[in-house]
Length: 550
Image (cartoon, rainbow, N blue to C red; front, side, top):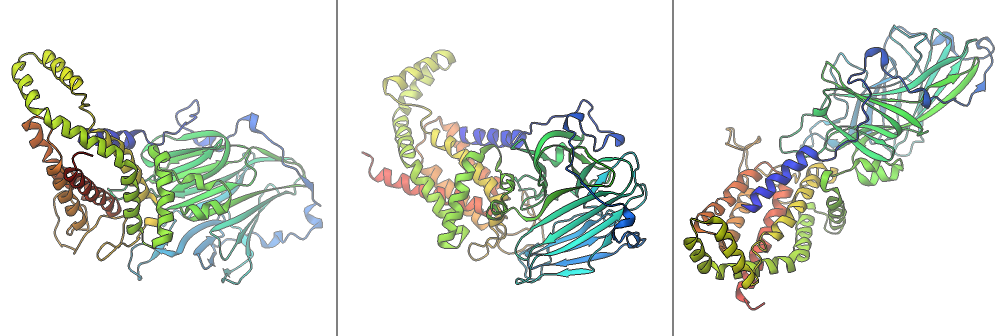
């Protein structure tokens, strides 16, 4: 009962309170339309400017900039395929070549942009000037019709240009690499007017909320690095607009295994706005400090756009602190070492299923002395059962006196009644940490084990039934690994010394059935861990029964 209740409490605790964000909400609960992109006056900075000749004295190609039709630019690299649009200089599609939706080789590649057909503004950068707002659609001129990059290719650039009605020209250059998911962005703002231009560079990320699997326990939503601290805003917390300010390292949209992030090169004080639009789309906005460009002056800014897997090695190599996005919630301090060990074992055996088994054996070895002591404590408690039964019978009408007599009995025989529960309680955080790892690590996504277990991050199913099964989420099939786990738990329960009254012992015998139902929709990698742990526990108990003196 202690095991079941502890598991339930910790699961609810992690679900409700994991990774709480320190949200600095503005004085108003919502941000009105006219306040979008506003920055506190204290964050106002001056861009280093250089004088540029009057527009008539330079060849800017301005006459060729105005366009009235949308044009799509296809970008193909070994790692991804993207479609840019000159309407707003946005990204309409971004597909990862090395990741597919399912294990089927003919399955489509993963599309990171999930938007409705009538909303093309998935990613965009703007220089917002409230004094002369642009009400019409903005069509940029594009330097390329398409770009194709091979493994041997040098980096290639795509430049968008637009001259606003106030004489400000905005250039956006995107640099693509053959072996990198990150895209470098260079922004140049030239003021060809005779008046000073002020505004904010704003970066917009949009996506529809991911349709999470019901067994998924991973984070999905908007995240940002604010003052070197990770802030995660879950989808269900987006009912009200969120406004945060400070030194922003990056802003991102994450789902179970992939991330889209914008990283400012100059990480000064900035602002973040996160909101859920009426269309159901989640929008994250990074707003740079207010900048001022003198007449015939020019300023610049740089960003890095990352759209790819939440792979720790790739994110660390990027060197932008984006690896801090890989966080395993409340038990991150336990999960991170287990995660590194799991990756290390996989480098040795090249199978994450075997790696989970090796990791389980290692955890069991670490807990072996504690489990040994626990088993001895239960054996001693079992010896006291006749005396405890007499006390319960004698003081059945006086519960307080019964408890005093039982505690005296424990003290006399130097037995700790909680000794048998301690190893289980300690293993629950390990269990929940592994839960997060297996449901939120790109390495485990579609990772095969043996035979029918082709995805350790999904429930195990042998065969595929056309009918539904109670308590089981689709696909429907035989949960072989889960049934074996329940059987091993039953055997372990039978071998465990009974230390409670007969009624409690009968209730405990239902735990294997309860846990079988609970595990039926969990990732097969997690079930494999619990099954291996049960088998090792049965072996340990058998060994200790054969050698009771130890």
